[in-house]
Length: 197
Image 1 (cartoon, rainbow, N blue to C red):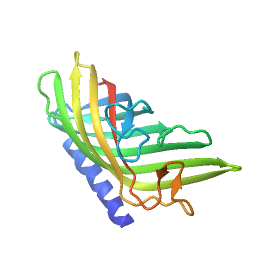
Image 2: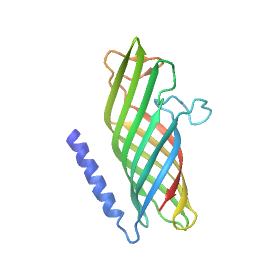
Image 3: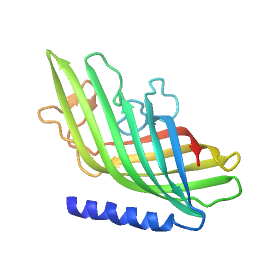
Image 4: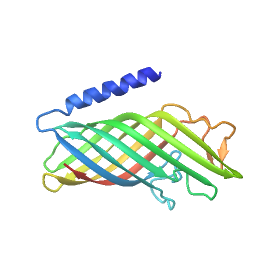
């Protein structure tokens, strides 16, 4: 399965790079901030959550006339909520194919990608106990970019992330209110960003 996923990643990256070499393809750089919600995150719904945890990162890639490619790195601290004696984080590195037609200064887009997801949980129970999981994952989402001139824009984005494999933490099923064993990690993310071309 690992070989198939690696082949899928390489094929997706090659196809998106070829599609992004349309006439006048432009490189872009997009730092973002947002928060995670739903699924396994500490914030269980998009609205009405008082315990929003910051998710920040950067995306970069290229945009052609109608499509593009994005490489994204994101990090969320206290992913499962902030509780004394417990720390957690999720780090993602995703490669995404984008459908992003240019309509004047506006680019609505949808995307799908695959990549890596790293979760870390630390418990202070007398001694520090630490669990780390590295998994292949996928994401899907969309949003809109609005440009003010040729080189600067803003971006709103919604995405869903999910691991392909189950998380496994040996000897623990419930860690202070959240269950991590034998489940695929999934969550949504809402973010805003600037876009520089």
